[in-house]
Length: 318
Image (cartoon, rainbow, N blue to C red; front, side, top):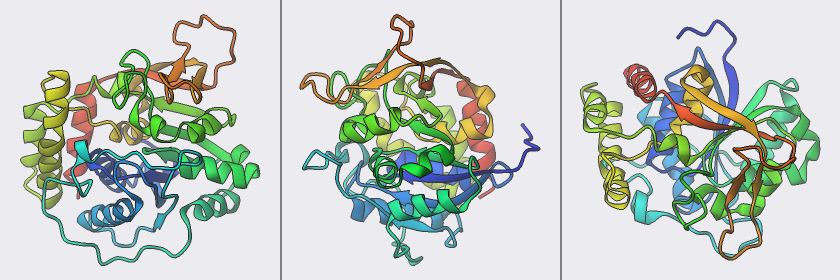
């Protein structure tokens, strides 16, 4: 699909993670659609010391050491301890291929300050936030500078679930569970929200032919993506008994490039923050049984073949 509109200015807020890495690569491979203003990192899949390092590793893999990478919050807003996911992503967060340590610099500015300054500097309604990890940085920025909320063009995030329920607890998806209070702030902010829940990402699995297509690119990027997916899909295949693993985070970038690959409903989504049993649950009013005001486009379906074709076509450029 050709997009004649100006590229969308975005900030990717991330906790790489193999699937986060693929999302970053997809954005960097799509300059006609995406103007990546910077990458902000947060503690999530692995601690902040690794997520900021991993983001720079991915930029260098893509041949883009010029990208600005910022370190942000290292723990949730309220909960005293960060919950991580080494059991899925390995001890580095990018287990699979062996990639060199980054030499490009980490920016001195805090990620939250970069988000605030960027939204104040750019024309109102021209910057999209793409959080693909816990929402700590975004919520902290909104709390510290509420004037920026009205300046956000859109927030396209990966997080939550409704029909698929939870992947870290019986009721909660990982990104929301790690910092439910932050998610609550973002979902109540009034900023336009597009949500990529597990319901969608579980419909786009990394089958063997899809991984083979990445490997067949014959590039460092293609090989790395194939080895990343080989690594983390073992966990999901064993857990779900599925033929592959979901590539969660690239769905956000794919939506910005070609929204026609996705369909969903504009509904109310609330975050459970108090219950011990369901803390971090995204209570999505999919069937519109309440009178609560819709606050999110909650995506329900994806054209999986089109999504993987887009990924392979774009990654081939790097």
